[in-house]
Length: 372
Image 1 (cartoon, helix red, strand yellow):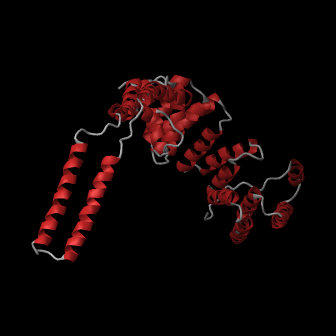
Image 2 (cartoon, rainbow, N blue to C red):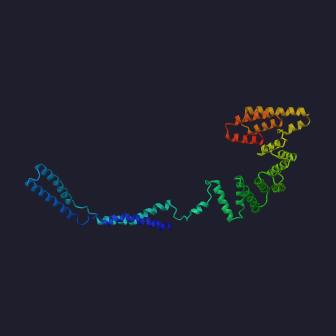
Image 3 (tube, rainbow, N blue to C red):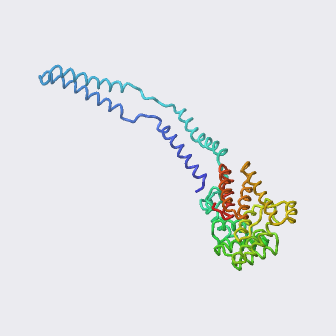
């Protein structure tokens, strides 16, 4: 229904409510004066009847006096009402009020609505509103809306690239594989897209690096030899095949090339611990050069000294989560699991007041093979 038609009906109803009493004009109903005259005659007859009853001895004087008082009161009330003149409204005032109602009400409504409302806003049906993305909606609703959009626009490469990682995070692995394939088709081939597809294929297989997943990782490395995700998963494939030495070689090569602040260093180092070839504590280039000429005993003593200095520093300043993880890893490399457990307990106590640091620490400890 047209919005303006609704407004017209509402305005007409408001004007009718105002004009109806004005049209009646406050006139008294015909016949009111006659009714009052008849009522007065009745009361007079009753007074006469009381006099007759007294004369006949039918009622006592006290009862007769009380009846006279009551009937007299009623007779005076009727006479007072008959003496009042009805208030007459001025025809001129009624015409002014009617004009104000007919013209003023619509003008007042328009004057309020035009600056505050949205009269030119197009219709927005409920179904269309439900399809419109809203960041406050649950993630599942947003995903459903994107999927509906892609059903109608399957060539939207950007939509597939946005949807695919979300599906992977939601555990919808088969749908994620399809989305990553479409992203490759409509956005073009890159190393990261190949690696993402391989990860989704492995997730759909329950974490097993299948031949298809391995193929995607190899294609990613062919496009970019430094693709970290592809390298890590190829090492994982070697581990699953029982080739721990090959897995360790891949992961060591990754650590050798990685910057010191690479966020995935802890994950790869933990993987090395898992295959029995843990990474040694990071040494500076000068220390490595000096260690080349040392015998095994001296080299071990130097490493122990570095680990002790790291432990001392962390006792003085325990906010360094990476430092705690390096210390735990160093104790595990040295085969001293008791000290690794002790460092784990000290680390949790040191960062326990910071929820974010504690979460990062627990994730790192899990990757190292300790309980998080």
